[in-house]
Image 1 (tube, one colour):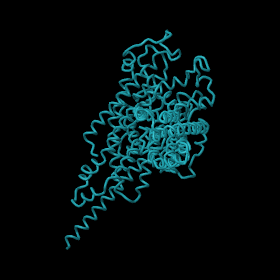
Image 2 (spheres, one colour; image 1 turned 90 degrees about the horizontal axis):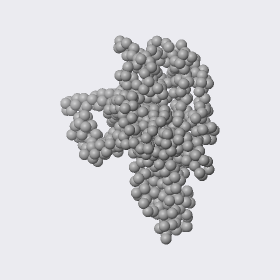
Image 3 (tube, chains in turn blue, yellow; image 1 turned 180 degrees about the vertical axis):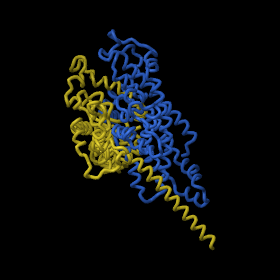
Image 4 (tube, one colour; image 1 turned 90 degrees about the vertical axis):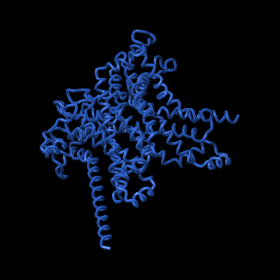
Length: 307
Length: 307
């Protein structure tokens, strides 16, 4: 009797959250899988085009994702962002954190400075970076000019893919540092000082202390950051809008920097017949991809991570 | 004796060198982090002539500041109106989120009921799913809420003939709860000793009163952190408002930045005006951060939201 009363009460407390989650999280999840298999989905009639109900297909919507004209470009851009920006920002953040942890004076101040990129708007800062990389009035070309390098068109009309991607990657690394430094530093501060004292007595060189003490003891944080960063980079989108605008590319070369998530929103905003199914299929592929990363990372860190 | 002395001196010299290196490195990277902010502020204060100066002007005295850029920016795009929309959306979404997550977290932390752990695991699992998977269906839901047969025939659209109130509902409704914050609050609630609960029970306090008078005040730091993170999320929201705010004046601050505004008659960007706009959008966030640094950094290091 008491238990069933308790049961009812618990569900009452849960009800507001569950209703909202049901409508905006659980149902959309189910519906994404449903849409991915509907033939010619018409977003206005909410049925298969020209029919009252639904007709189903097996892989058509998925193959439309793979065959879409921007698919290759999107995969290439997303892969480059993941493979370059993630390791670069993790290593940079790690070195900065170790350096920060070794000092006393100005530590708090510098920590605040390094955290600033986190609290900014990725579109606003993307636009600022675009101007820093401006071919005529930008800081980067001025700096390169001191070394006799001719002005490079980084993000403006006529920018090459390599130049635009370089600028985008620098911005991405800049934006990714804050969170990583915060996590690494709090990890470093929780490492027992005894290890370092022992190393000091043995006069162990700094490099060895770093690779044999710091990195192994920090490995849970490194593993966690690696997973979240890869997933975050796989979903890159607003950084590109910030830097290149809603056309996702320099003027005259729209979609040059489209990412996988860009494909999803492109389809969703088109809203043509079947477009929602393409968006849903692309979202499912993205989910499977990020999920695979989570699994691989969990497996690798089980083997390597030192707790 | 002499030998020991010189060794000691050598060691101290080495330490000093290392210190200088570490500080140089940190200050160098600190400047890299601050540079975009500086460039944003500087550019927003430049006159049209100063913008195109070559090499770029790196410093402006106050008498050279062109404050009219800010006036131009808010004339081109109604940022203050967007800020009002953003603040209203942030308030409603945050109040909703706090109510639903506090109630649900209480049930998960304090009450015993059938299927509690299974349900909780199931909810946590949804955190691995990329938001892009929800957006498609949520957009469909908002554009045609399936109330067919209940109140309106064929469904009610929050997008057609949109009023301000409707836009606020469309912008907030899917964000009135959060699995992550539920998890975050549950952790805080679980740290409250059981004895407090039993003592309150003996005194005849109801569960709801106990939650409101004891648990919520104790978990106040967590609730403050949730409020700030939620408000920051709304401030940076770009994609959802672009999809569902159907009239220009209903949009949120970030949407104004990468619209068609801030360009001259030929469609070329007016950089000083653009940067004034990005500063208008960035500044409130930075002020909030500097005032509430402790809560934000604590919350972020425990959350890992934002890719």
